[in-house]
Length: 156
Image 1 (cartoon, one colour):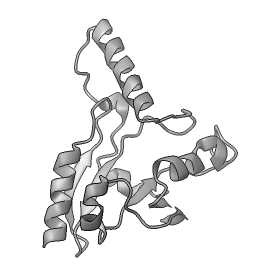
Image 2 (cartoon, helix red, strand yellow):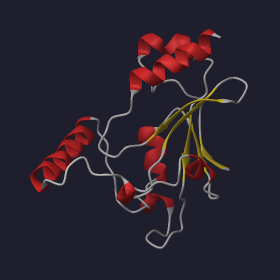
Image 3 (tube, one colour):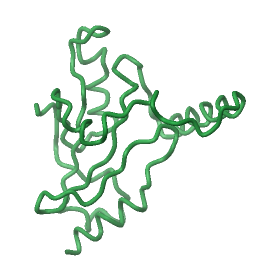
Image 4 (tube, one colour):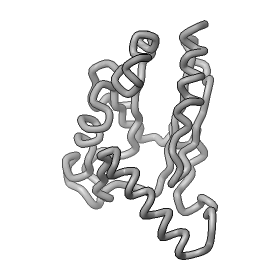
């Protein structure tokens, strides 16, 4: 994996938990860096935006071999089963996703390979996998569940 950017990690968890989570390292893995078919540079692709806006205190790695996504099942949005086939409900669901993203200040440029789903993998201090969350488009991450796993690891 190629290191893209980083400075340590803490701010992505509630401030009241910050002291407890200090021993943990948080990092992000991205699939693409420029140049790509759509983008000549990382600015166009949004790598620097992701690193500075959404992951400012963490390490960001480029993993071109696809091992991270393979471990998560190489899943694509197009393979995810729809929660409904009602076009009105699908439209409302898409609008709700947009509202949640806007409320959180999340923007996207649709320049990268946006159909590949990612996830969250939590490792313990020995490097063993403790928890896996496979992204489900349209659903929020199970934050409380993840924090519970992190608390358990820190308490060990």
